[in-house]
Image (cartoon, rainbow, N blue to C red; front, top):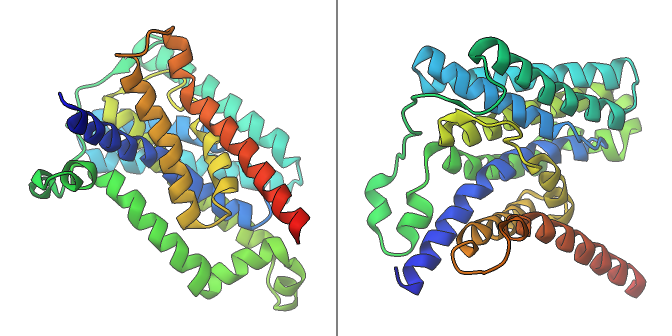
Length: 300
C-alpha cells in the first residue's frame, strides 16, 4: 500500500474509533451541563458492550441487541442518578462504585452464562453500512461513507445535541440546572429532575458506545471500554462543553488511537509504548488545554 492508501485507511480507522468516544462524551456533556461530573461513563459503556452483543447473539437481531445494551446501561444510569440525587450520595464515589460493579458483574455473567472469564465470541452479522455505494468515492468515500450505521448515528447525535442544548426550552433548563438552579426553582420546577434526565441520556449514549465496541468485534472482551469513559470526560473539557468542540476532541484522540494501530508495523519500539499513545495524547491534551486556559485568564 502507498502512502495515500495508508493515510486514508488511518483516517477511516480514526473516524471509526471516534464513534464510542463521541457517544460517551455527548452523554457526559449533558450531565456536565447540569453541574455533575459523571465518572460512571466507563461502567455504562462496559455494560452496554456486554448486553449489546449478548442480546444480538441471543435474538439474532442487531437492533434487539443494541436495545438491550441501551436498556442495561440506562438502568444502571437510573440507579446511579437515584443514589446521587435522591439519597445525596457522593457522585464521585458512586461513579467509581458503578464502574466496579459493571466490571465485576460482566465477569460473573460471563462465567455463569458461558463458563469463561475471558473473551466471549459470537456469530453475529456485521453492523450495516447504509451508504456503501458512496464508499467508492475517492478519499472521502471510505473515510465517511464506508462507516456503519452507528458511526453515522453518532454524527447525527452531535447535531441533535447542539440543537437541543441551544435551541430548545429543555436545553435551556438543563443548562440552568447547573449554572442557575434558583431560576429553575423559581419556575416551580426541580433542578434534580433535569439532572436525572441528563444522567439517563448518558446511559442511552453509553449503551450505544458499548454496543458499537462489542458488535464491531462480534465479541465481548474483558475491559473492552479500555478507559474510553475517562477519555470522553477529557474530550468534554477540551471541547469547551460544546458538541462541535467535543467532536473535534474525540477525533483527535481517535486519530492517536488509529495511528498507534498502524505504528506497530513500522516503529521498532515495544508494543506497550505504542498502545499507550492514545492515553498519552489525552494526558498531553489535558495539560496543554489547562495551560491555554490559564494563559487566557491571565490576559483578561
